[in-house]
Length: 441
Figure 1 (tube, rainbow, N blue to C red):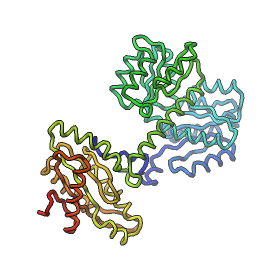
Figure 2 (figure 1 turned 90 degrees about the vertical axis):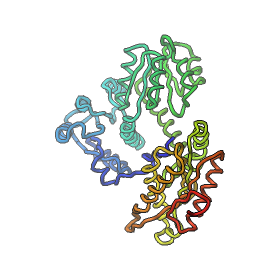
Figure 3 (figure 1 turned 60 degrees about the horizontal axis):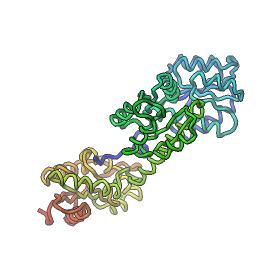
Figure 4 (figure 1 turned 135 degrees about the vertical axis):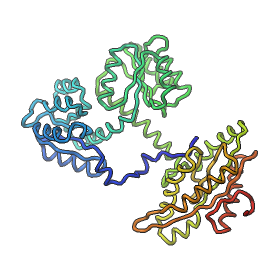
């Protein structure tokens, strides 16, 4: 298990200026100055959102002609414009392959159904501020959906196509299977699939058996499963859910109900995964924390020992962290550990590591003996020494000391204590060095 941490959702490493140059805008086609003002005000609080505004159909065409359809992540359009009173702009943006959200004051259910048949993203009525906030949430969701793969499993080709079209309108990546056996093979081969939609009545392996097989290996937090059935068994939904499905839909269902269920389940999964990430990672640096280091490190140590592989553990400690705090201010320690976190993957990407306390990072290196691990630590020590920490208008360097131990029969905690003793020796001798014995050589 590599110690590399995924900080994409926690730390933004690209400056706001670069983001502003590269992010896609959305196109707002709306002739009401009040609504334009409301949406722009909501967008101000999010640096990832910006829009071009067209008050007429003609202005919308001009903007799309000028910048190209791919310039826009989506279009939010009103149905009743001065030069397009019957929703003509919706047909145009869909023809341009721009994901289209209808935002209108028209409450007519016939119009709503007509628009949904055009494969729009959603139909939102202008009822309150919540409606506008929902539209903004939906715009952001469309970008996130592009990174989510969904598997649709149904023995009906027509039904697979219908569901795939609904999901594609929401910008999901969609793959399909025509039976449970094929779906199970696809799930085993592709861990990127995050949601499965499965019909109940299928040949060879029905949806119910598919769910039971999946839940032997994969939890609800890592793969969302939604069951489908057109059968009249009122107990079927309960059976699906009791055996591991996250949700259930009875066919036929409406587009809006389908989209809401998909969105609700994905957001629940993401929320759970975010909480789990927080429980196992350091908030400041994004590094795996002490809990994660020990929970995942002990099995790795046992596995390495069972294969008769040499294994080393090191404790890397930031030198003089309190002095850096006193000299450069209260934010200096956080800046230092964040800098260290960025450097660690360059040397230890394939190994398991975690932040043990304020100044110390433990590294477990299966497959390396003391000689190889010592060389790697020396290289890393030099890398740290040459790095520069930028803090406000200041910049400064820092160094690390490390204690190294090769595992024999000790457990992970015992090895870490031995490494800590050797780190203490390195610090006592002035720091900025690697020690792999109980006396300085």
